[in-house]
Length: 305
Image (cartoon, rainbow, N blue to C red; front, side, top):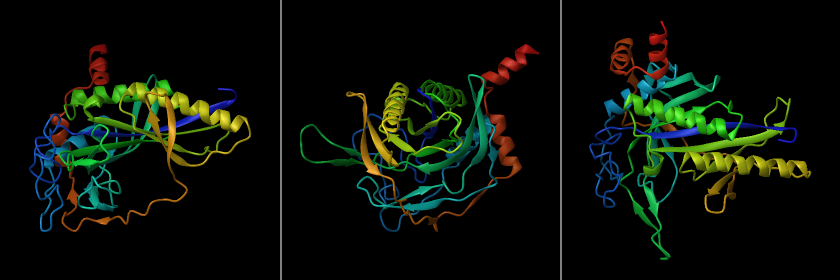
């Protein structure tokens, strides 16, 4: 790469395979349904409605954390992340980002250990729909409240192919555990990437760019290949990069600026007053361990003995 190296981190969202949503009794499997049928006062954010934590979703999150050799947290707290957007009827999202299920995990990819910063639970938001050539946008809230686990890696990934291999292996783990279909085509597995380049041998990280709108593993690889090449060309001609969020255009094979990230958003996080903290004791962790199927590395080690 002409004297440069890439530094890549991933943020991966997995829809959890549960009967109901994260904080209400609505059906979680909304794919293929008519718009706004799988909704209730809780996921619509109507006044007076109260959320209830989905135990199965929490256990799925713990199971993924264990499979990735994370340190499982003994206390899980849900927070309100406040912002305004048409597909967020409550004007806040309930998230465990500040109180993860697990931290400090690893996943072996091609003999390299990719470190997992954290795994946390949250609810998904609704979906904006832009029908045909009409100059309107519609909102489908079937997805609002569907349980998610978000996995954040450390910036350990060094190439677009390695990023794709990581996602492929994570999908296999999620499917083997039975916690998610992990099907990108149905939106059950989504990834955002953070990428920067720096001169080889330099310790300091370069200017980070986030890329969104990646709906397949192939898109992740292509977007990274394009963006790494773009950043190297800018730096190679004496230009300067700005911290920003860019969107991937799959048809054109390019990334385009969405917004600058010079200023951090203030989401005014605070503990959700309607949800008490969850205490995760050793007995609960052992129960989840017993429910876990054997993963491929453990099976290979058992047969090798």
